[in-house]
Amino acid sequence: MTRVRVEVNGTAVEREVEPRLLLSDFLRHDLGLTGTHVGCEHGVCGACTVLLDGASARSCLMLAVQCDGLSVTTVEGLARNGELHPVQAAFREAHALQCGFCTPGFVMAVTALLEERRGEKLSDDEVREALAGNLCRCTGYQNIVRAVQIAAGSEG
Amino acid sequence: MKPPPFDYHVPATVDEAVALRTADSDAVVLAGGQSLVPLLNMRLARPSALIDLRCVGGLSYVRAGEGGVAVGAMTRQRELERSAEAFEACPILREALELVGHPPIRNRGTVGGSIAHADPAAELPAVLCVLGGRVGATGPRGTREIAADDFFLYPFTTSLEPDEVLTEVFFPKAPSGSGYAALELTRRHGDFALAGVCAVVSNGSARLCFTGVGGRPVLVDSDEPDAWQAAIDPSADATGSADYRRQLVAVLGRRALELARARSAQ
Ligand SMILES: Cc1cc2nc3c(=O)[nH]c(=O)nc-3n(C[C@H](O)[C@H](O)[C@H](O)COP(=O)(O)OP(=O)(O)OC[C@H]3O[C@@H](n4cnc5c(N)ncnc54)[C@H](O)[C@@H]3O)c2cc1C
Ligand code: FES
Ligand code: FES
Image 1 (cartoon, rainbow over the protein chains, first blue to last red):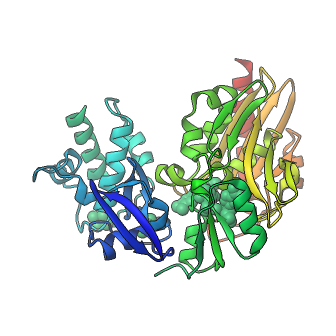
Image 2: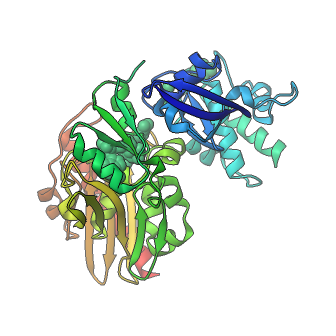
């Protein structure tokens, strides 16, 4: 067992874990944060995307022990005082989800994208390229792109 | 749990990492994990131990100088992609890095990891070869430099010894006035390419390095399509036939030369 200290959604967490425990399973099983979804568990679908010190990362391609000393943000950490985060609100407004399985991963990837390109105008092509690592089997992506543009407008 | 059990080491120095590798030949180095963790999850890799380099100091840097860009092995791919001084010295780096996976992959994946992994379809090894770069490695016998062309041997196999750690990757500047291009064809943006090419042209000479069409990056010092076809050895897989890859090499090579020449004229 190895000791890991991480900040998860602003709260300090300290646990003894097996080194082979994936960050995705640590979040879901050990911390009960089941908003982070797992699809492929080899890096392809993006459902498990979280923020590590603000940058997007696949939680299925990280060991929990690798996060020692880092801060992790999951979809549960976005809303403030019961108010949806602007990206979440835009997804609802644009009807950018159907079954919702892929949604937490998209929301985290979009949050990182808009943070990085704050104040810039993004073309639809740029949005599609930035989100090419997230797969959705339901929506056809059209409304997801629209949601990103809404969120970009409301934040910029 | 998806990965098999393993011991986990977090050395603080390169020497400690080398000592751990020397003591246990089944232990493997963990860098960004973007290739190794999928292999663990699928249990295609069953190492006795992981030697995680994340706490080794001094392995994450981008230093652009007269001769080119020196990059610490643990530098994240995304950091190199966004480095203004690296772009100025070696603009082909950014063009190639933007083709590597997706932003979350490049946020974690390291430059040294991509080079050490030596996937024949990967972009960075081709950039290193086309620029005539080199890597630095440290082992129990000390530190040595290995030229790119001597480094990549077969798919996923390099001339790094089992007890060595890759510490630095050096990308030389192309001659002044030269032009460059990095192009590839993928089924979906961010996938590994069916075939790709990195090209550098200067003063009438052309050097191309193809990916995905041989056991390692295929370097050709010629702008003759026949010479490219003679050098490559493509095979078929679920994404495309060998003949299709030959066709792609002809098309991508021509487009890369056109783009590189247009840029060199400026
Ligand atoms: C969905 C997806 C898409 C991808 N698409 C692309 C793509 O289009 N192009 C591309 O090039 N790559 C792609 N990758 C792979 C990615 O670029 C990896 O980051 C890279 O291949 C490995 O770097 P890493 O730091 O993650 O290394 P790790 O996964 O940690 O290690 C990879 C291998 O290198 C060895 N190693 C790493 N560092 C060292 C060192 N310093 N010394 C000695 N040995 C070392 C490890 O032991 C291991 O065998 C993709 C990955 C995923 C998950
Ligand atoms: S579950 Fe992590 S990328 Fe698919
Ligand atoms: S909404 Fe169902 S997978 Fe995207």
